[in-house]
Length: 224
Image 1 (cartoon, one colour):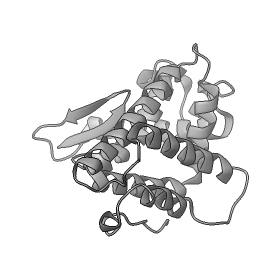
Image 2 (cartoon, one colour):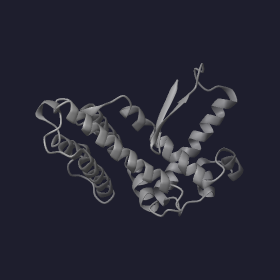
Image 3 (tube, helix red, strand yellow):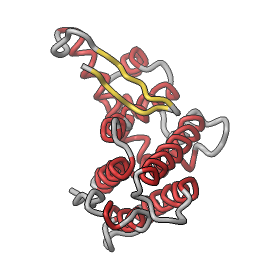
């Protein structure tokens, strides 16, 4: 079984061979780690990284500090694990997609994010905090933005090769506009509700980049 996630600028694949599922002490340890990650996700989403503490996360998880640090030695290590865990689904949704189909995968991710306001809050808050170079998530977000731009640029270049990109569209510039639109809409959502679903707006932007024949592939999933 393979677990795929995005972290930094590379794809990582974690393989668990010949194992149907966790058992015994392994299962208990895996459950505790998941409980800690869920608690850390909630705390980081509400307080950010700088204003949160391991003791607060331990309390949220219903365990002692020594119990928490047995699994995650420092707050920085725990933050990295939370960010990595939340990108697992994105990696799965984009793997083996190309051209307009990859753009469609981005719409699926946008719908997922819109259905989970806590996830939006986590990334918006932490990405703002992490602009400082000494923040433990600085490299993560720097690499993540690089990966997003590279991924969307590649998708648009592939679309152009297949005749699916409108004439005059510059892939790298369009990728920057996509990232700005996506981030801007997520920030807006923290201040207001209602209005047009963000996935519909992102789909409208992407639709403006592709030829009419490619529009049948590009569809906007309905946010949950």
